[in-house]
Image (tube, one colour):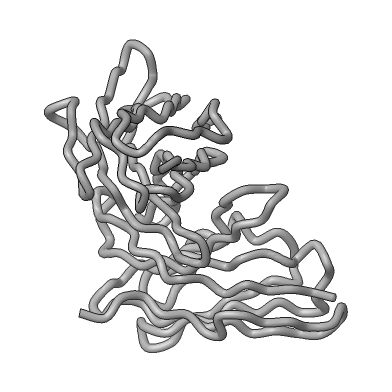
Length: 114
Length: 116
């Protein structure tokens, strides 16, 4: 079956612009996660969705970052007023709900802020 | 705090040689441990996972890992490396989150180079 998909695969933007990153999880997966992968910080958790709710946003680095999920499926990560330190690969993962369930990752969106 | 340490940033092995990638974790409760592999420009692919039971777990692509509680380790091994194994390898522990989910806390990764 189809895996996790993300779009765009690459995004180049100018400092100060807003960007939206999209994630389509595996059908039937109720849990959705966003992670960020950067040279300085490695792989770090950003936010977790269960259904359309986000019970844990503890990893969002600032209030410029927000995310939503609709229909228990597609999620959008929005970064407002982008900064150069936001340059990274943004990875989305989905899973069933149990702690023992595997998280399946998408290919990521590479964001470059000029 | 929970953490994962991968002490080797880069490892080079010859094709056909054996491989061991080290991973140490710090976690107060019973850890749920994972190894993921990332090829250039790709997302993360699960190699294997440990939750309980047999401490030697088998994964895909001929990889295995052994959980050693006394050493807080979960090292990844492969008896004979293939050139296609060149990639970055991440060890991770899963941490429960508010609301029933769990987040993966990753090590810094080990970049594997395979010499032909």
